[in-house]
Image 1 (cartoon, rainbow over the protein chains, first blue to last red):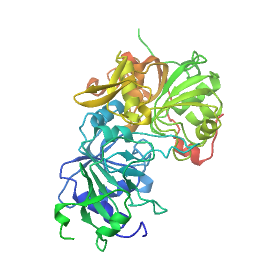
Image 2 (cartoon, each protein chain N blue to C red):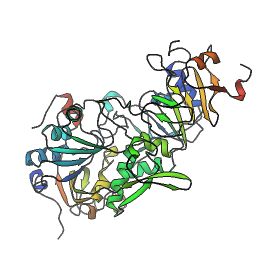
Image 3 (cartoon, rainbow over the protein chains, first blue to last red):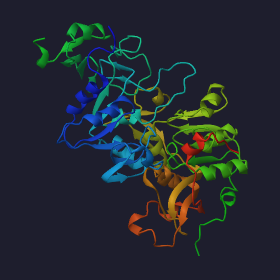
Length: 221
Length: 236
């Protein structure tokens, strides 16, 4: 099965956005998680934290208005909303490590059915290890959401019984959004709570490297 | 009379010794004190240990300091970014040391160092390879890793405004590591865009109180790293 079946990237981001409650303080990881901000349902206000020192990130700037003094964690120019705050790194990570950020959305290389996450290094010989704030986010943010394709580019499962790459954190992931399904990490392991249109439970199971249970809302499937 | 202004970049970095540990502010290009780093390259100190979130980009600023073989060891959280080639090449060749630290732990180690706190426990990195070799202790039913405060001989920091007491403010997200690095270095050297009269920075709005700053040098129109990289510039 292609890793591209089911939801598109934009639909995956939108599926995440509907689950984030109004008024949440949110940290979006670099890459696909950044798309989530485009799909927040009308009437909800989220405040975006960027760990290099801004609470209240706004939309992308016009190209000619980009300010090298105002960037996000991906080092791209951003804007600040009215009501934003700037702060230094120790304050920024006090927000993360002290449990003040409600939700983060992160990418993943591998997720174990225990909720272990690997998203910073393949551990390969000659690779330059770079961790950034990933370990702080999974240790401190109250709800950790993962947004990722269900399988790798070569079709290998990313959801496994055990991660083989170096961990970012142990038992830290709450919910996973893939192109095929929305999956909770529970004490019983992976549990599907939503399926992309046209995707069957068997397809999800075939693309997953660990047992997959079914949540109450999908018992009829 | 207290007057922390020094006349030139050259004078500001003149006494940095070989083997010094230097905290350099900035997250990517935002807050990177490029002119102070270039003055340090001219000054010639080597065998440095540098604390920065990244390892610079292109062939200017921190990347140029590394490329000129002045840095023995980097302490950082994210040593590869777009346009960052100098550090990866030396690292793969085994010619530069790396101490990889999670970003929040790096910030907290600097904060602790500046606050006279020798070590602290944190949940970050528990159960990962970055926990290896460190003491682990359980608090409230959860494991935590012992991390040590970090201090430096010098800090190089970029600010927006300074006064003769060394009070500082910053521009937007350039603040990042500046305030905490100023607290954790024995000698904090600041390049500011503007020197203002005492009181011009509202005491309610002073971000770094002058007690944490030792030297201020004015760089009125600092270069932006991304602009220099785009132009393909190198230093010297």
